[in-house]
Image (cartoon, rainbow, N blue to C red; front, side):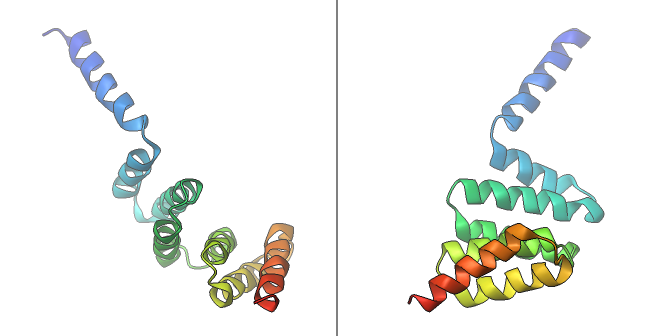
Length: 122
């Protein structure tokens, strides 16, 4: 087998991996240094959310926070995930943390207000 055939086989294998977002981000999480792992975990969480896998999404955000505990974006996304599952008290807590870390986050504020409204309508 010549060199170009070997590289073609490697490229094909890598493209197959990248064709599935969950596999791609799990691979990225496993290979990322600790500094970058929070971002990879968060991206995997976002993907799980898009797939409606909210429990998996929450686990990824919680893990991301072990690497980067002061990320307003991860706290906001975690709060939104909790709200999706009807876990309003936890959602309010996480959205509040997001706003404490970034008081100018209009998206976090809108989500907090919407979650409080849902909680009031139970």
